[in-house]
Amino acid sequence: MEPILVTGAAGGRQGSTGRHVARMLLDRGQAVRAFVRSEDARAAELRTLGAEVIIGDLREITSVIPAVRGVRRAFFTYPVTDGMLDATSVFAAAARQEGLERVVDVSQLAADPGAGTPHMRRHWVSEQVFDRAGVGAVHLRAAVFFENLAVVADAGDGRELALPLGSPETVLPLIAGTDVARVATGLLTAPSGEIDPICRLTGEVMTIGKAAEAFGLAYAAQDPQEWRRGAMTLYGDPTTVEHLFHLWELFRAIGSHHDLYEVTETIERIGGHPPKTLHDFTRVR
Ligand SMILES: NC(=O)c1ccc[n+]([C@@H]2O[C@H](COP(=O)([O-])OP(=O)(O)OC[C@H]3O[C@@H](n4cnc5c(N)ncnc54)[C@H](OP(=O)(O)O)[C@@H]3O)[C@@H](O)[C@H]2O)c1
Image (cartoon, rainbow, N blue to C red; front, side, top):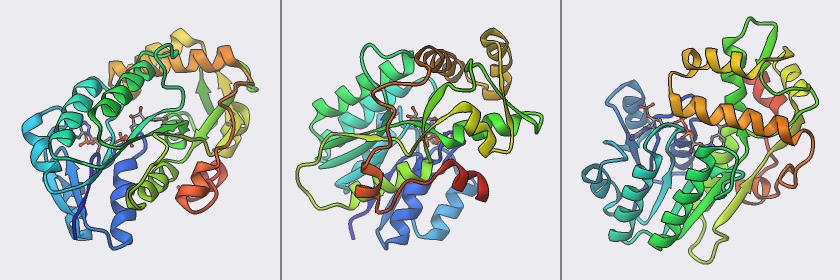
């Protein structure tokens, strides 16, 4: 059976979308070629589960061409860090050369050339690169992952969820990383044919006050500059800090209403069942 290529298959702490996609495909009996960066315990686990594992760097064409050779479909994800546009260009060029028919890539809800954070604008550029490569790209424009809030909850004092989001009534569009993966799995295994190239994904829309309660915590409004001073210690990555600083600023400025703040039907239609709620997520983690 021809494998489906899954990048980011080891998973990280942003959403582990690639790890979930690899497992979901394997559970369906689909052959998987898992692309990982390091030979480590996560790679060994993927082999145990039945995946073919390829080690490489997504920014390096000599890694990516052999990975896409012999597949027709692929899942592409790259974390919020430096190098996403390099990785996209490399992957799109390799996918075009090897004649891929569908590439499902992870993007962000408000990807747009005028978007409020530099990384969202880069996501829009990435989408353009995939579109022009003619590889049947479908962009998963996802809301904020529950996992993003979990990182903050886990780093706190066990009483408060501290973020620079202003009022507890500030609203966030949210989704579980597993729901992003479920939709990706649905798209990667769907029959050939026309598919809308943009797939918006929001599983729940709620205030930060209610979100904190779902973690059993009280929301504490943090000063933005104070947040920035502590963020490098928590994330260890300047691109992540830059993105989140502007993202929190954007949510503060929007407040409670935006046209994109609605639960999307795509999760149930393509992923097979209704979105996971934040309460479901916090109950089992
Ligand atoms: N977090 C959010 O709230 C949110 C919301 C909407 C959209 N998104 C989008 O979701 C994406 C990130 O989610 P994710 O599930 O992929 O993140 P993740 O859980 O951090 O996983 C990223 C994976 O990519 C691998 N990787 C990193 N650099 C690589 C390289 N140069 N070559 C090969 N592999 C590499 C990592 O491997 P190692 O662990 O070995 O480094 C890891 O397995 C981003 O595009 C982000 O914009 C995030």
